[in-house]
Length: 330
Image 1 (tube, rainbow, N blue to C red):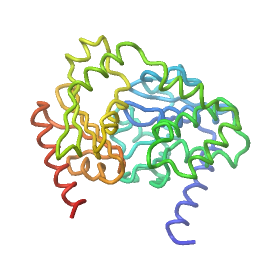
Image 2 (image 1 turned 120 degrees about the vertical axis):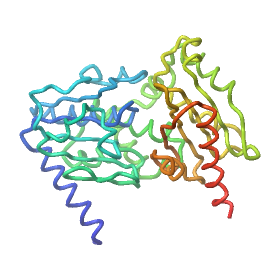
Image 3 (image 1 turned 90 degrees about the vertical axis):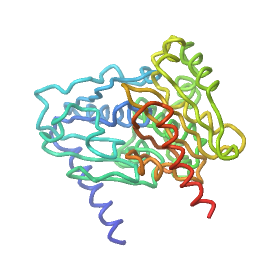
C-alpha cells in the first residue's frame, strides 16, 4: 500500500469515526447546489438522523428547481442555527472553503471540518480531507463510505442515485465508469427507481425554462472551425421567457450536441458580472482553462466568474480556450 493509499484509508477511518460522534452535525456543500451536492448532503443527513443524531443541512441558496422533489429537501435551511456552532461540519462537493453555502465565519467556529470532494483542485481545507478526483461524484464517495455500515434505505439510496446520475449527465459523460455503474446498480437494488428519478430531474421542466432554453440556443455560434460553441444568457432573456433561470447549468451542455464541437461555453449575466460555464467532450481540459481565469471544476465541466460586459468576457475566455486547443493540437 503506497503512502497516498494509506492516507486515504486513514482519512476514511477518521470520517467514519466522526460520523459515530455525538454531534451535532452541520452538512453543507457549494453555492448554487446541483444534484450531486444536494443528493449527497441530504443522504448523509438522513443517515445520521436515523442514528439519533441532530443534523442541520444548510444551503444559503436553498434548493433550486428541479430538486425540490428529493426526499427531505424541505428540511434544508438557508441560515445556520446559532446553537449549532461548534459542531462537526461536513462540507461536500466544495473545492475550497469560500465556496461553501454558509455565512462567513461558520466553518471557522466548527469543532471539526470534514471535507469530502472529487474536484481535482480541492485545497484540502478541512481538518479531515477525503478528496478522490477519480470518483465521478461525491454521491459515489458517500455511498462507498456508508455501504459498509449496513443496508441503506430506499430514500437514501434514491438521493445517492440522483447524485451519481446528475454528475454523469444521466450516465452519458466520460466519467461514467464501471465503479459508478456498479454503485448505481446497488442503489437500484436498494430501492432507487431509475425511471422515476430521471423523469423528475430531466422530464418535468417548467415552461419558462424551455422558453429560456430556446432563447439561449438561438444565440449559439461556433468558433475555431466549428470546434467551440458559444451561447449567451442575459437578464433580459430570463425576463422575456418568464424564467428565474434556476438550474440553468444543464443548458451549458447543449452546445456539445453540435456535430464537431469539442468545447461548449455558456456566458450569463449574474449580479453585474459574467458567469461562464465550460463543458468539454473530454479531450480539452476545461478545468485548466477555468483555473487560468480564477475558476475551477473538472476536466469536462468547469466554471469561472469574469468581469463584464459579456462581449469582453467572451473575448477573454476565447483567448484562453484558443491557447488550450493549440496546445492540444501540438
